[in-house]
Image 1 (cartoon, one colour):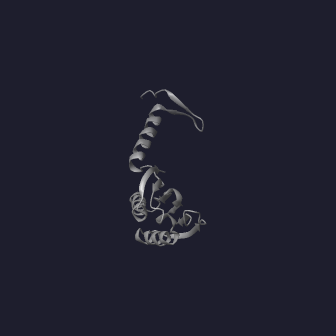
Image 2 (cartoon, rainbow, N blue to C red):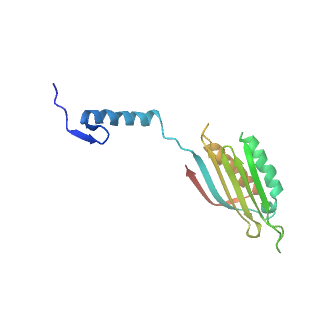
Image 3 (cartoon, rainbow, N blue to C red):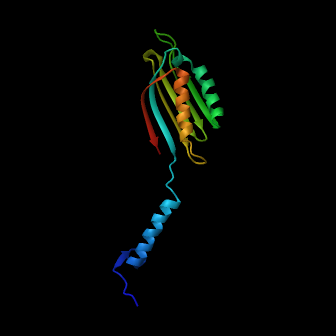
Length: 156
C-alpha cells in the first residue's frame, strides 16, 4: 500500500492528504477554464468639450437619448432632466440621468465652459454589453459635436 504524503491541516475536517489537496487544486484550475469569471459590465466615464449651444439643449438631448435606448435595445425605467437658469452667457446647462434595467447613463453640461461630463454603465447580466457602451459613448460625442478630453473605461 502506498504511503500517504504529508498531511495538510483543514479546520473543518481535521486533515486531508497532499493527494486530496492536489485533486482539489486541479479541480479549481479546471473550473477556471470552464467557468470564466463574471464581469458585471463596462463603465465609461468621460469629459468632453462641445459647442455651448448643444450643451444648453436638454430637450434635444432627451430625444437623442430616447432614440439611443431604442436603437441599442435597452429599457428605460426612469429619467430625470434638470435645466439650470440662464446666466449672462445665455441659457444654462443641464443634467440628465436615465435609469435603465441594464444600469444607467448620465450627462452634466457647463455651456459657459464648453464642457460636459458623461457616463454610461451597462450590466452584462443577459449579454455582453461592452460594444453597446462604446457605441452609446461614440454616438453621444457625435451628437454633441464633442471632442474627448478624458475617458476612463472601467471593467467591473
